[in-house]
Length: 367
Image (cartoon, rainbow, N blue to C red):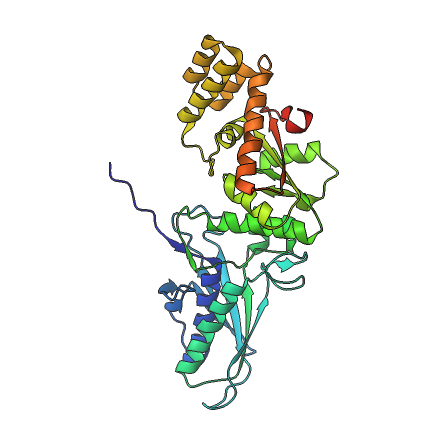
């Protein structure tokens, strides 16, 4: 069967740049453009439809764009991203170069913690999108022989609501979403947004003075970890998803002293195998490895056979817990070894495995 080709989309930063360009065109050409073309950070160009355009009595104009993430799962897919533009001064050619002032309005988060690309107090509009917005606006001004100062207020009408579905609050970004993008394009399943979130979480933890982080694979494992170590700062908890190697390597690069991996048994198995990326694929190969470890430790061929025939890691776990803690411990020890390989020397690794109700069934600190 021929696989469907996944469709690329564009970032919130690209959407904001397109909205800003549309608003400048509307002011200078006295009409609302249907589409605009913006230059991406890669140097490529892309046409973006304008969703709405509105003029205000003070002379400013606002345009909006509907964010299209393509076939990539993205909480901001379908969000309305806007820019309200005011051209303060307009001179003839040869005057001072154009200056673009970018601010965040409704639905754009504000940074409240150190460690991100921008300092506390700034709107969460990353440097890449700022460059795109500036380039889009100055391109129009130059084409019309205008220079001067232009104010751009980026806004997201439902940004605060969308932000509740993200980790922004953990990173100290409050009041709305972040305007992101390192290339301008969202590649389906590119992982760019998730790895950027991991990096930001670790940066904030370091900037808050933390030397120890707890790495989990999702919200549920994180909740159990927070219940086990309630005294740790909120910033100490960083979700790495399936990015086992990436998470450990970035911990080491940022100079952390210790990292705790707190995971469920299914992810624990993939980590124990040394997989850099622990997505759900390779399930049978993972059970093959577990069966081999179980037979070597218990000399029980029947147990190994049950594990081989299991449909899921959860079913296999039922054959091991509580009667075979040594096999579960082998998984935990292998996690530590694999993590140390990915992090390199200098990072102290602890592995903790939860059962599916959140009870700890292995803690390498107790071995």
